[in-house]
Amino acid sequence: MEANLKEIVLNNSNEIVKMWLEEIERNRKHDYTSTISDELFESTNREFVNVIFSSLEKEGLTNDIEGFAERLINLGWPLSYLTDGMQAFRRVTINYILSQSNKVDTTYFSTVLSKVDEWVDPIINQLVNEYSGSWENIVSLQKVALQELSAPLIPVMENITVMPLIGTIDTERAKLIMENLLDGVIKHHAEVVLIDITGVPVVDTMVAHHIIQAAEAVRLVGSTCILVGIRPEIAQTIVNLGIDLSKFPTKSSLKKGFESALELTNRKIVGIENTNKDIEELVDSLDRE
Amino acid sequence: MDFQSCVNIKKEWDIVGARQLGRDIAKKVGFGNVDQARIATAISELARNIYLYAGSGKVCFDAIDELNEKGLRIVAIDEGPGIQDVSQVMEDGFSTSGGLGAGLPGVKRLMDEFDVISRQGEGTEIKVVKWLR
Image 1 (tube, rainbow over the protein chains, first blue to last red):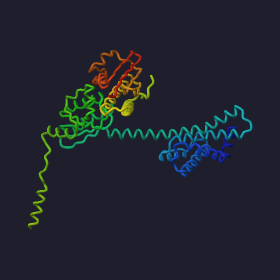
Image 2 (cartoon, helix red, strand yellow; image 1 turned 90 degrees about the vertical axis):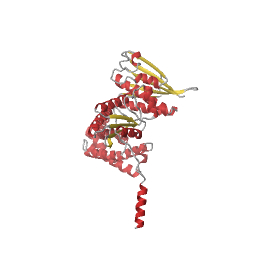
Image 3 (cartoon, rainbow over the protein chains, first blue to last red; image 1 turned 45 degrees about the vertical axis):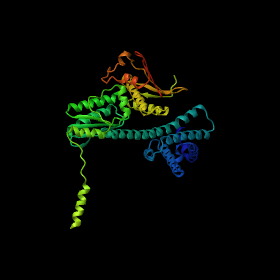
Image 4 (cartoon, rainbow over the protein chains, first blue to last red; image 1 turned 45 degrees about the horizontal axis):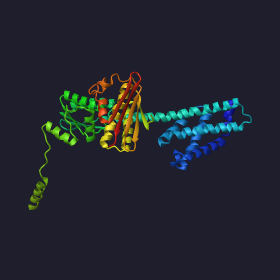
């Protein structure tokens, strides 16, 4: 009888596909796919239903599903399109099979239900797995990308390096900051390191604690750490929290910090004297000749 | 008590989620830049305490909008081990985890009202309020 059910479905595939397409079309009106063009939507539906039937015929999962799911993921179609589609297929198929048989008792009914589930569930599982696999992949890639952006150290001048911090600092990042900072100080022979926290949204006790530790470690390897980019509201919260940042110099902006870093290394920025005068003299001398 | 919105704290990144939601609500209530930073910092401390000491819990927000007063109420609830000695943790510089020990006393100074209820073995509830002036 079970093979029988499959035959009913396969022999009447046209009928079922028609019902399925109608159902999908009805669902479409009030949902996500409304921005997709009708042609694309229809051709995708056709392909989807072909994939379903081919896996039904071969009694098992095929590479078609994988390829189909992959393409939809690339196009950015929502997972709900696929799950809704499969649910619609389940409803339509069950309805169709039941409407084809003359007498329906409970055993027959439950056989039909479990058989259709057997067809539909593995496909849903595979589709969901494909999707979540691609999401996990994206998340892990972004995590790596974020980590690479995490704690850059920029040597701006001999003996002076800058570490701009942007975004939230968590425990993992704090560790990375410390390592990069110390590595960089040794590698670039930095005498002064400027830590810029302009881009750090919130400085709580944990962040402050990590910065203090980093500055202390930098002091131990013989360099000076200047904390710059303290916005007024951050300054107020630090005072409210009662955090003592007096052990190392702090400045409001990177510019001011850089100036005092130059002072610490016995240098200063001097403007070049008027170069236009030289050019004028040159032009004059040319004219004379 | 019925809260407008809550954030569950389970992972370290949930602290950021709580902070962002709190900041958004604070902005809607009408707090200025400095107070937003204060509120965000206080949430950060409370949420981090949950993450560090209780493992999991939640931070709830409640915008207060009454006739003569507006503000934001934040409640941090956990079912952790509880605080052994509340007066001790309110001292500056006390920490069991090697931190700065400025968290709870700092939150008290950042906010206008501060209330701790803690039962050993049952959990902790910290209620803070910032009034809009």
